[in-house]
Amino acid sequence: MAGAEQRTDGAQLLVVDDEAFFSAFLREKFEELGYSVATAADAFEALEFVGSWTAPLVVLLDLRMPRVTGEGLLRELSKSPRAATIRVVLVSAHHTVERVAAGHPMVAGRAQKPIDLGELTRMVVGATRALGLSTGPA
Image (tube, rainbow, N blue to C red; front, top):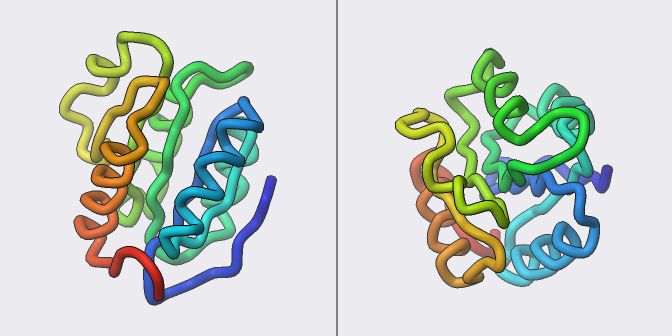
């Protein structure tokens, strides 16, 4: 897992995807926009990060991962005492991304791979604002 320094002045993103290239791409693009970004290759790394993080968090979550799916991770995040400070954007190459977790209060958006970076950025900005955080460079 690639860590990040804890910030309190802006948005912290956690990219959860088993495709290292995709995670690195998103990390680079969102860091260019001023976000602090950490990555996790699976649900277990993501839960470890969330358990050690105290600031509000936006999670970019792949649905199709080995061992525990993104939907399973979303269920675990929902049980967290910090659930109110976490927003999730679901990301998947599978067309069902639009139907997964319909109406879930933590889900701030859905993006299908290949992603439209502009649209994904708008979703992240919306999720960040919903958490009462600033967006972009600190």
